[in-house]
Length: 82
Image (cartoon, rainbow, N blue to C red; front, side, top):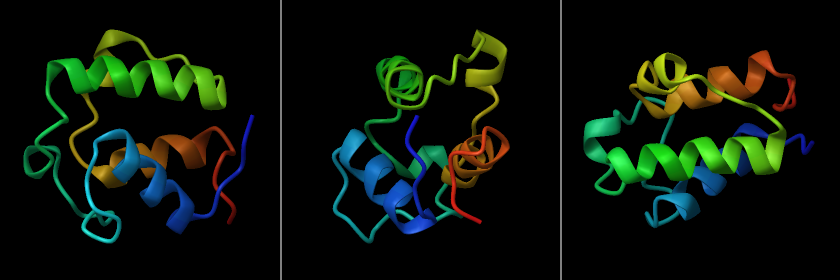
């Protein structure tokens, strides 16, 4: 799996949700990202699996409430550079 810097991870999340780079930060809540709806959840789940080999259960996926939660998840799976 890939290992990214936090900046690269933010760009990856921005691209996935079709947001302009730089608008999304760690403290951006899910509610502020238009594409992070129920379909966006599935896209995120699939992308985490394909790109990082991270498989999420539905409860884990549903618990992601902000960009920081995704960053923390990547960090727990050793996918973020320290």
